[in-house]
Length: 132
Image 1: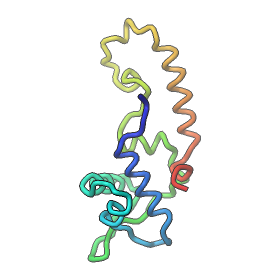
Image 2 (image 1 turned 180 degrees about the vertical axis):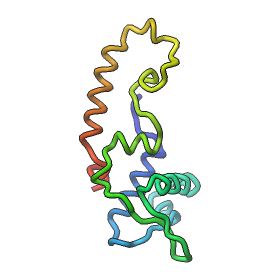
Image 3 (image 1 turned 180 degrees about the horizontal axis):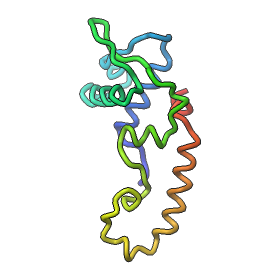
Image 4 (image 1 turned 135 degrees about the vertical axis):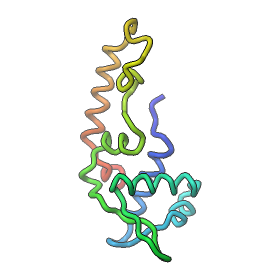
């Protein structure tokens, strides 16, 4: 089943939370975790990853946390999903050429069409489309 991972879901929840705050406002990991009932350890790793990807910026100090750095309207969903989780594809054979079925697969062409349509749709949407 095609679905978003928890890491992507938590990243989007955090970004929407930050986007809803005043410009230059800082959100702590604990604040977001408590507000949306997200395990703090997983959220902390997710936010660290988003900071490493320059989507948010860490603010140090006693009142530290994170705030938006990137323009969410400039990041399409394919780019975002791949920056958070890695290669995106409907089936493993789209990003892993070591598939043992590849020479015998009779659904590869129709799956490629579905995958191309899905990628096109996600490329036409920005992170901001989801977080607004």
